[in-house]
Amino acid sequence: MIYRIEKKYRIDKSNKINFYNWLKEKKFKEIFDKRIVNSIYYDNINLQMYDNSIEGIVPRKKIRIRYYDDKKNYFKEEKLSTVNGEFKETISLNTNKPLKNIIDKTYGICQKVLSISYKRKYFLKNDIRITFDENIVYQNLNNYLKYKENDNLNQCVIEFKCSNDKEFLKIKDEIPFDEIRFSKYTNAIDFLKKNSYLTLKENL
Image 1: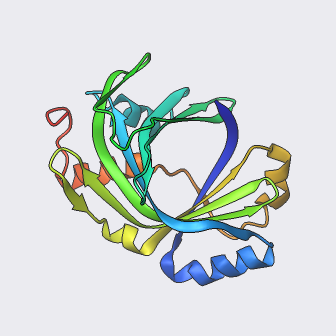
Image 2: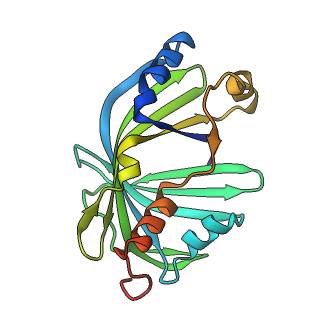
Image 3: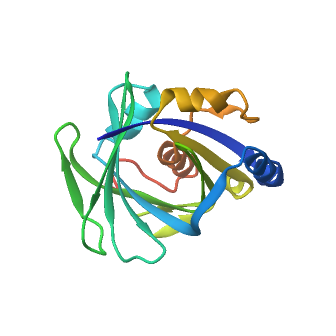
């Protein structure tokens, strides 16, 4: 697994221009074309990964299958949070279909719970990569209906990703946004539970 720092920020869409101006001022360059990112999240029947994330337990893990708007290939991603930092492993599945189940040595049999899609832009300077996500949509994979949380339509998520602590510290105090503890997966579960769009356990 690859070690990396991940810091997350959330801004209103009306503040996008200020964000882009800040990127320009700090000489970040846009890389890649913007694209739609789709993630299918897996968990066990007790939603243990969700519970661990809510409680902040370490080590904890998230397992997902990711694909992009071209749907040419699917990737299995595991994100591990530990006391020593964040680690990520990505494996190409060489297929354009998601896995029905994933067996994990800690969480056991994990099944598809929900999918999350959003539009993403990428920016880079030295070792620091920034992703900018908007138009976040949740889909409960048990009934195949999509739900757009009203707040999500106006909120954007910014992630700073870096493999070098010293490199990130150089810019940390210059970031004009409030850092948050945020997970798209736990946020989606909370929203679907609150609105009775997801019946836990019985639907898994």
